[in-house]
Structures are given as structure tokens and as C-alpha cells.
Length: 164
Ligand SMILES: CC(C)(COP(=O)(O)OP(=O)(O)OC[C@H]1O[C@@H](n2cnc3c(N)ncnc32)[C@H](O)[C@@H]1OP(=O)(O)O)[C@@H](O)C(=O)NCCC(=O)NCCS
Image (cartoon, rainbow, N blue to C red; front, top):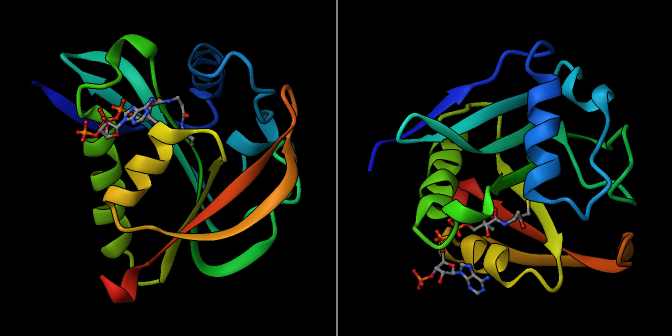
């Protein structure tokens, strides 16, 4: 399988990234252009067989907001916050998510200014929980009422890079 991850150009690619995110998670209210344009946000395309099949979006020195739609995230030094990671439906269950997560954790470990990765998922998202578990993330706090449509709590996931 020809797997590659390449950096997106922001803000030019913002529209295409948002369009792909709308397909990957049509039920979510996606975060807005303000996020793509934030100076600490980095977005990456996931390619398989030369097709854009998914994306990874993270923000350095940031933490989980009180709500999914929150645009200005808490400033948390030395922390990499995974804003979004996902694949088109037809590319799931083939190990691509695992490859992408491994790429992310390897990349973060090489960043001298990052101590931990923090992420958060719908408490019902078993696929994502499994993905995090395989990369040795630990469960953090649960924030009730974090998502809308449907309303659901989020499970915060934490990987301390110094411990791995
Ligand atoms: C989460 C996501 C990225 C997983 O990617 P993926 O490529 O399908 O995952 P993998 O194929 O690498 O699977 C990893 C493991 O999780 C398990 N898994 C995958 N989907 C699962 C599901 N729906 N339920 C339970 N386990 C699941 C797999 O079985 C695999 O374990 P195995 O090898 O022992 O069988 C993908 O489901 C996705 O894009 N979902 C929509 C967006 C999303 O929810 N993103 C997470 C929030 S940021």
C-alpha cells in the first residue's frame, strides 16, 4: 500500500480541508476558518495510492475547550492538541488510521518543545478509542455535554511523551 502524509498549505487549502472534513464527519458542526488560519495549527493530508483519503489537524500549545465548537482554545505550553483526525469511510478498517496515529506520535516525539499529546473523542467512538489505546494513550477526564447533534460527553485522551 502506498501510504503518505504531506503537509497542507494554509490558509489556501482550508476550503478543501473543510470539505473533506464535512464528508468524513457529516454529523458534526465543523470548526470554522479561524481554526485553519491560527498560526499554531498544522494540517496534514493522508494519501493512499495517491488519493487524499483523510486528514490530521493539530495545534501546538493548546488544550481541550469546554465545547467542540470553541474556536479559541486554552493555551497549554508544551502540549500538542489533536483537533481532528479522520478517514473517508471507504478507507477505514484497513490499518490506515493506525499508520496515521503512529506517524503523529513519532512526529510529536521529535518535537523538543512538546511533552504530551492530548486528544478527545465521543465517548461512543470505539474505533477512535481503540486507535488511541494502541498508541498507549491513557484516559483523562470526561467532559459532559461537549458535543451537540447528538449531545454527548467527550473522553479526553493523553499520551505523556516522556513516559514512552
Ligand atoms: C477513527 C478512525 C480514524 C480509525 O481508522 P481506521 O483506519 O479505520 O483504523 P484501523 O483500521 O487502523 O483500526 C485500528 C483498530 O481499531 C479497531 N477498530 C476500527 N474501527 C472500529 C470500530 N468501529 N469499532 C471497534 N473497533 C474498531 C480495528 O479493528 C483495529 O483493531 P484490529 O487490528 O485488532 O482489528 C476512523 O474510524 C475514522 O476516520 N472515523 C471517523 C472520524 C473519527 O471518528 N475520528 C476520531 C476523532 S478525532
